[in-house]
Image 1: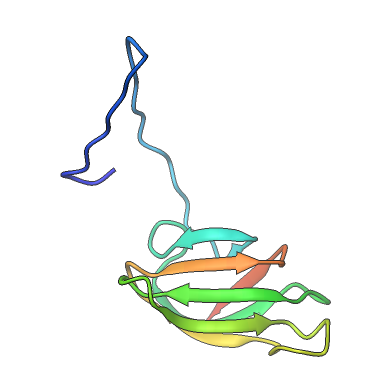
Image 2: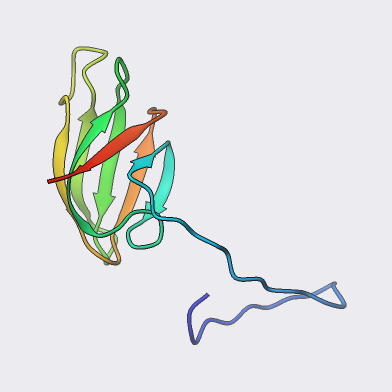
Length: 105
């Protein structure tokens, strides 16, 4: 949660909020990920696991896609890797891939 957010709770007599412990990664699986929460900001080459192909999208802080690729060439389409510049506030969406490795460039 960030300063100014409001949570409405009903039907419970007590609620406990505990900060989540996060760790920065250089490899991400399918899911939605946030820059500087799940992966450090920087310039990377994103490469899928061998033999895989799926969707790879990076969104800017306004929710607009800056990168939208079919990552991997398992089905004869797509690119073998993609270079991306990740900044604070970017969100990464990965689907159809079990692992994408991010190598600093």
